[in-house]
Image 1 (tube, rainbow, N blue to C red):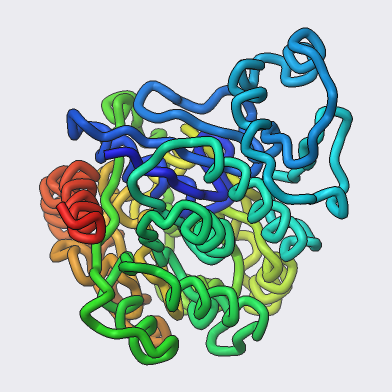
Image 2: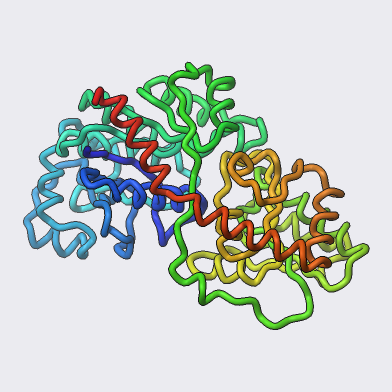
Length: 418
């Protein structure tokens, strides 16, 4: 089974959960002996793990024919793509994309991020997809999240192959209901064109059915999982007196950071020896700094900025409680990562991971009093901490990407008529 996947992030260069999920799912799927995955991202950096898939950087795919030789291409791509692959892809240029700005070898310079001209990059990515679809053999198309749906649709139109789209989030989640009409249109058109839709939770599945008017028979939930940590035994808590409660993620309205600050104020009003950490970055960060100051807890409240790689797990391992008060969280992998590190988690009932976790504490995102009570209990009663720690470890170690990959493969077989 040859899958052509379109994504936007891939570790170690990630900006959110999309890259983490893409890595875990593809690695889990690769355990199937006949699975062949080509994964397209806007801009690879050359240090991605390609031991179980093949990565194509959209920034290395020519969309405008340039009369260049092998040595020129080899020097220009700098080892990120073999020149032979460049020339094979160049044979797939079937449309006139000269309206799009390209470099000296006919490729588009993608940012590899979420820039202000994101819609333009999505459109350019669609052009790249047409070249790949004309030059590669594949059995199924798999488009991850709204940014790649236009690319998937174009590849389907060209190849006639079935398309599966993977809804990691919708704009209803990201915007708290204040939907961007351009984003909604792209999402809706992708869902309408898909042969099947995968959602990361039943919460998201219901949104897809109700808000995007999709046939329930066309939508299947495949819950996310978590990648085993090879260095988990190297993670330890520092010797210290204070307990640490951590929020880790994008500091945006979807994640409910203001509830974390308000909970911190409640806890600190009656509990000594506790510190709060907000790890991450986002458009609400400055507002949260001001809110912590207004609540008079700035001396007990710390901002680390964006963390990545091993630093994420070191922060989670240092924590005594992890808290995710998301207002609308399609899944939420970070609580699973915290539990891997032996850290008890408090999560909102409005998160997809709440559907599969029995040993995380669940509250409504707005229930500040309940969250504060649970934090007080965990940091003050060692027996409760130890029970949540051990039960959480046992549970999360059985939530594997391999199982998610098997479910996705069954969907592939269905849409391919196998």
